[in-house]
Image (cartoon, rainbow, N blue to C red):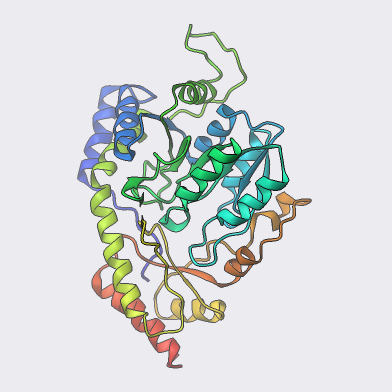
Length: 362
């Protein structure tokens, strides 16, 4: 079976982790600080704050921006952590529709909500599947309506808009280092920002509300959402390899798109001002279930990201949204293997399987 994900952990990662274990300093410390600085520099941001996971990064950012009692406009077509982070911080997620071509939050749909509501604290676009949202438009909207701009960059490490990397395009950006992501720390996350006040608020929240003046000076109710030196050591080694990972993902995606050009499935769209880092390679088809079953029979793994819009989940009972493009995507989108450990033969096998399905050779 060609797997949908396959984390690549090498000797450098193992050596870095063993160095931390041998040092005895395994909790948060100097290795975390080095990782924060290196990752922020990679993104083109001034500051980085490492967190226990990507959800913690989003939650801490929402806390630092004080969204409590206010609305945050976001997408219904994402992993539930996007909206959960808003609710955990006491805010109200308000769902706008997506662009059907990119799967990302639609700026026109967001502006419609901004015109109608005066309680909006922030816009939170998701760079879904590794393709940046339209950050030029969102930046203009954030400035015009005086709201914060939060990048959910959990799937887009290294992606760019007009040659600027995500993580440097909003007031704050949040990343995940879950094992299936483009780079991993096992579990982990990162917040990047240029704002020293936001950095201070995030650090305080993830460290039991300490304000830094003394060890036991807890001035707000916070959490323990810190990253460990062990995870940071793994992350530093992975960050060095991230450009090569990205190049491999892009090459695999190009091979898939070329091979599928004559089929009826819709392959990913990449606007000219952006680069896609292919956390997922996602196609659209009006017969997804049959296609997925046949791919499995041919030894090709695939996944549906995401089969249910967030506002339709049981945990979101009482929420509603008029989002026909997101609803259609939830019924048609299917992700194929594109990770760096896919060989050219694997990519050809995926294309051949889909081509055979197309002509009825199942």
